[in-house]
Image (cartoon, rainbow, N blue to C red):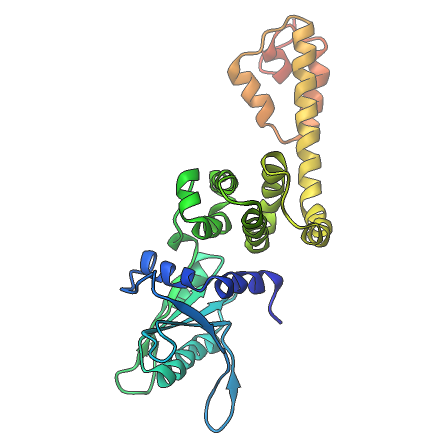
Length: 301
């Protein structure tokens, strides 16, 4: 059964099929116009005599009676050999219908899976070797400029999805870009970005949107997602709060006693994640005459 993440990613293309053309043109180097009219088509393919098989999203580009390109979109989280074979069947089936170039885009959450689906599929049909356009994090640009994010808002959503954990500025750029859109579009883009993003970065999205945009994410999405997010994120946040509290207590005691703390010592205390060690340093700070004594680097006088 498709996951909510899977469905959300496909819903973006179904609501704006031209985005598929833009990605093929800009990220995959396909000579396809990103401005030609396109539409979502039925995704019911079948073999003969009547075995049905269904890709996620099917789009045609050009006039309905004379399409110029076919686009098939698949979202894959795992590496499955039978699915690679299926992609070749999708492309062949659609080509038989429209007799025009057919491009299959596979969206993955990691680059190893993307590389797997980018490997050409050798078929027994003479001359037919199928190659998908596989979109992993490395394919998606890192958009950290709000102006660029506003100009390419859907691509900015994919940038958040692909790079938000390693490049948090993609999230802030996306949120800043939302300020330039009407309220109804802000809500739509915010919800879409939330739905397709990894759980790990959703608290950051929630915080930034709450702080700058009066939190446009729909109440239902938040209500559904919050228990799962809290279960995964709360322990880490609580540990970070305890760590920060212990560190600030050390600084407070040393400041009250007139013991100077240089930048290197401050970074050492703030960077310590061992709560037991931090608690020991706090005990030592009550009597220490230097920060070296707190750490035990020099003996107590």
